[in-house]
Image (cartoon, rainbow, N blue to C red):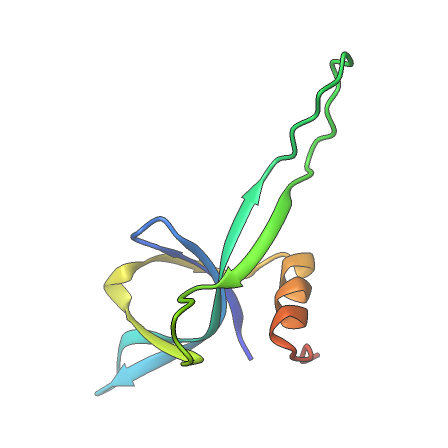
Length: 104
C-alpha cells in the first residue's frame, strides 16, 4: 500500500492509495484507490490574547467523487501537480476512514 497526498491541476488535495498505470514501460497515469478529498483550515480564536496556538489545523476527509460506487479511479499523469508522503497523523486518519490497517 502506497498512501500519498496528491495535488491535482484543479487545485484539489487528495489522499489515496496510489498505483502507477504503466503502458509499454511508461507511466501513463495513476490508479487512485479510495481517494478522499482533504480540506483543512486553521481554527478561528476569538480572544483578547495576542497569542494564537501555532500549527493547529482542522482536517476533514470526504470521498473525492461522491456519486460513484467505484473505489478505483484512473487519473492521467498530466493532471497531477505533485505526489508526496502524508504526515503520520493524516495517514492514520485516512486508514481509519477507509477501514484499513497500516502496513509496517
